[in-house]
Image (cartoon, rainbow over all chains, first blue to last red; front, side, top):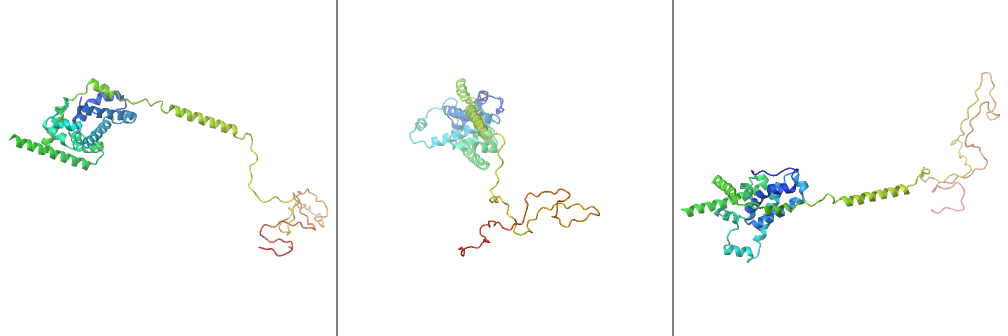
Length: 170
Length: 157
């Protein structure tokens, strides 16, 4: 099934979840790089969609769910950044815990993981969800100029990584 | 460089997506967030409002005075005049309604006085007969104006 958003008021909520869970779960994992956290965030997003189902179902429920999911992921990223030193997340990181199953862990993923939450979100929405600048701006509640700025900074960081990788490979 | 990077990112995400699947347990858990039934949320308050409105309407219908209403209230006006109609101070102000003059047939003699005898034709009797009387009933003056009657002493303002 191609990346086709679920629309239509004829869908029930359960049918919508079944049709969109795979795509949205992958989006969540790419955003937070944590499978369990991704499932939790997706469940919260679906709960919010469920509360407004009658209103949302008439439009584009998947776009609404994705918007909620991305903003939850960004808030979670900010919250984890503000965690005190010595938290469980810090210990795991220091101990070099192996990556969880179903979570990408290549070199590029390390660079993406190191990006700020909003820059990472812009990259995921642009290159995984194939959204345009206007749609990304609407999903994140920012201006198109800010989207371009985040994209530019993220690409600069990735470019720098690629240069280092080529330099290291020589 | 950017095109290469963009292609790299797209390919990276497509490959990584193959390893991320929503299992049946995950799907069951996600489907559990279904909307709560809201059909009857407003049913009870709406019924209560309708019943209240019906009760108020019934009470209004019962309390409202039935039948023809009394003549509408007139705005308060000046006090009613006394029983005997006061003659006008100047005869020019009020005149008795003109009584139809007797038709003179040709050759008929004009009566010497209109008041000498009864006219040939019935005359419309005026409602208020204005008769000059020797005694003038004083009309209560409007407030603030000096009265015609002599006062005992100077009025203090």
